[in-house]
Amino acid sequence: MSVATGEFCASCGRTDRPLVDGVCAECTLKKRPLVTVPESAMIVICPTCGARQRGRHWEREGAPMNLGSEDLAPFLTVDPEAGVRRVRWTETLAGETVRRFEGVADVRFRGLDTPVPLRLLVRTEHRVCPTCSRRTGNFFTAILQLRGPDERLRSHAADLREYLAQEWDRLVPELRGEWRKALTRREELPEGWNLYVTDTQAARGIARHLKSRTGATLKESATLWGRRNGQDVYRVTFRLRFPVPPSVGRASTSKNPAPLER
Image (cartoon, rainbow, N blue to C red; front, side, top):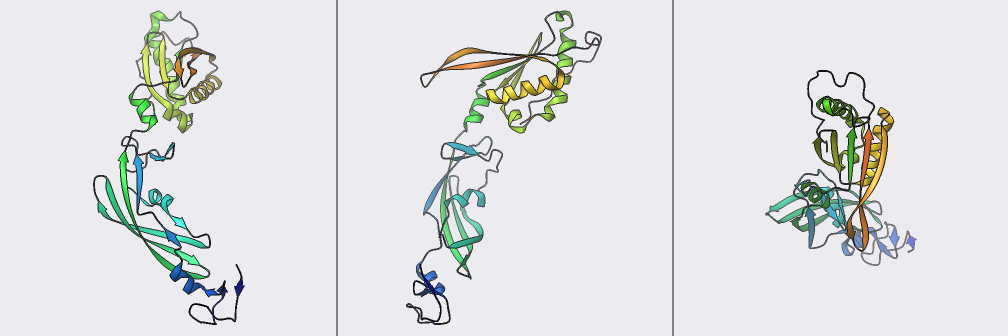
């Protein structure tokens, strides 16, 4: 690509504009689409959490169900020489599964600012994402077992569960967001609590954090659950035995653990 000045544009004949390959920017704009979109596009949305499917992955959990510029931006194709400053979209048709958008892209091209009109028809499909499917189906890959130092507090089981609940309440705010999202349900047992987790790495991170913050002992074990894609699938159990102060066993008010935040 050659840039020249002082010569005339091969299309309009002007001599006061820089030329690229013998043509000025204005004439290039008339023949060259700077921003394009397909005639129609498909967006898959999880009706439970609002996540969007991008290829094989799901993104933006917690996003609103209404479509916005972030949903439409991936469908833009921009000329390598152009810079898009802003895109404004207006929804002109809102059906149950079909929506139409009119847009204007503010584009900078070879020193010139120009608006580019856009039209995009979007079809939406509701499909439950794997994370929500696992949560509603009670799927889990790991268990966190919150226990006392041994099995000798059976006569004070309620006091033990209360103490373990208090420790959990205290430490939940410190956990990473992705760890809390992996927690799916809890189960009350005479000897303590079981917490079910959909991601083994998240469960391991939680277990190690609890151990470091409380002085609990940690034991990890795995059991064969089944086979998937020709490989063995294991469920991992993380048993945490908390040191219990002498006050456990005295009269106290029962308390449930903090809800599993998402």
